[in-house]
Length: 139
Ligand code: CMP
Image (tube, rainbow, N blue to C red; front, side):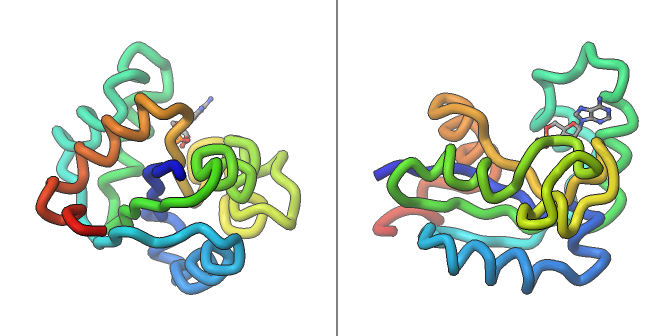
């Protein structure tokens, strides 16, 4: 059993796609362990995406991620990291198949509707960034 961290990004929340994304999540068999809506501050978005701070798209990414509320989630299941990344599809929504979440709900390489951790250590860091031990205790 593995846990991963997922975000429904501001573009998808603003467009009202939370329901479609949660339905796909439920159909996938992944278990929703924790969920909350939050509006990120600039400092919080910078901290979350610190690994990308030297990239040319960093400032634009931080602006995008703070433009409205996001939905943060912890997902659990067999191979949860790879399973959620498969459901999302590739980073660039314009190249993502219409069967994927980014293909259905994203519009560009930046405004790609969803985020998912890429490895177990990243997942642990990202879960801890958004959720306290208390919120996950007993789940
Ligand atoms: P995500 O999976 O959340 O990880 C980092 C994010 O940066 C990515 O999704 C996109 O939203 C954004 N991103 C990645 N590559 C680019 C790029 N080349 N141009 C603009 N935004 C990008």
